[in-house]
Each structure stands twice: as structure tokens, then as C-alpha cells.
Length: 317
Image (tube, rainbow, N blue to C red):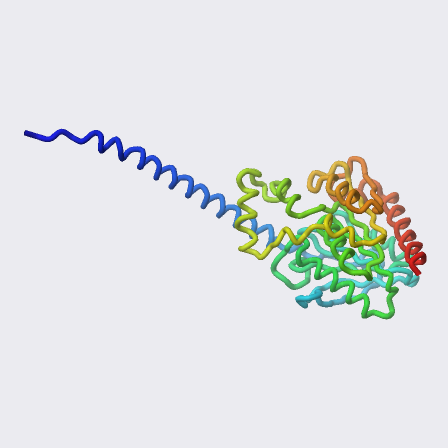
């Protein structure tokens, strides 16, 4: 007599097969998401360098090619020093992410020209992994602050330059300028055009602007895979937590109300954390486009701020 198939045994195996298949699909999806996040994260922290084209000579400015080292890790950095006959102050520019010392989308050279006429020496340089400087990683402020501090150290070695140092930064460079100003007492004042307030919070809300990937699930995957892959520590880049260390020194925040790359709420948070900061909201201006939108008014705002820095330094004395 033939035995009948054990249907009960077959049915009992079916849920297990489905379960293991589901686990396999979920694992595969997680691997794919992490793999894509790793690839995108690597590209974001290793962007293609933008070539430095042109020079201050293009607008009639005499300049020196200079090089100096970043503070702490001693990376070689390249830039231009433009000396002003007035020698009343020294301004260091800090460019944005994926840009170089020219930051042509602002652009910086006409602003430098204005500052030299006003009596300010100007240092324009490339952050690590940008322009003609050394380095292979862009960390969005974590290590770039060492570069900016190295630029300050370089100015200190030049006894032919006025030692009243002002930083003016754009986007990543704006956030980095706030960090450098908070950490280095030699900084007399900072102008921050379109800074982010806190890198972790900013990326959680806006990473898709740069990655072009859906926020869910890729933002969280980015934070899981990219830090160990690159050494990036987003928690170390928080201007809003450090700006209190300005201790009364002048800070000018400039932000376009039409900025969708780094929303204006970032500067609002910074002013809330440091109420002594001046805040210029520029109607309709998009990311780092306040100069393009307002022209001479932008230059006047900068000029007035530099005069305020002088007054503040005289009061301290």
C-alpha cells in the first residue's frame, strides 16, 4: 500500500521559505542602498577639482603667488596675496564647496578689487582638494578649518601686513569661517555669506540636494557608511555650537531668502545663538547670489562692517 504525501510537512516548510526569501530580499536591498550611498558619499567627499583660470592681473591687480601649510596636519596650500597701499586691514577669503579661490559663481575677484581700493590686503587661497592645493578629501569644514587657520598663521608671519584679520566666507567657506573665528582670537571679525548652522542637521534635511537621491532611505544610509569610509565626522562641524566663542567680536550674516541649497533658516539659527551678529536678509537671492542681486549695496554692507570691526578693535584697546 502506497503512503500518501505528507502535505502537513510541505505546508510547514512554506512559511520558512517565504521568511528566508524576504530576509534575503531585504538584505540585498540594504546592500544595494549602502553600496549606492557609499559610491555617492565617496564622490561628494572627493569632487572633481575646478581649475583655477585667470588671476588678479586680469582686473589690473598686482599679486604674489603664495603657499603655506594648514594648521595641525601641514598640508600644502596655494593662493594669491594682493597687497593694498592702504594696508589698513587684511581680509582672507574662504570659498565654497567644489569651488576654488576664484569662486566665479559669486564672483570673488571684483569684491577683492573693491577691498584693495578700500585699503585691505587680500588673501585668496584654495582649500584642500581644491584648485592647486594638496589633499584628496573634501570634508565640508571638518578639516578645511585647519586650512583657514593655516592661512591666518601665514598672515601672522608677514610683518608687512596689517594684523587686523577679517574672514569672509561663502557657503562651506562661510561655515568654516565661523569655526575659525570661534577658535582663533586673532580673527577680528567674520562675514559669512550663506552658511549652514550644523552639518549633521543640515545634511539630514538637505543631503538630497547634493546627492540627487531620495532622502529615504539614502540619507540614513549615508551616515552609516560614509563616516567609516572617509573619516568624515559631521558632528565636528557645528558653527551654531561654536559661535558663542566669538565673545563680542563682530559677525555679519548674509543670506538670500531664495536660497534652496542652504535655506535661510540656518543663518536665523546662528543669529539666535549669537544675538550680537548682524543679519542681512537679501530678498529673492539664491545660494551665494546676494552680490549678484544687490551689486554695490553688497559692497557697501561689507565696507560698513569692516569699519565696524575697526571701531570694535579700538574699543577693546
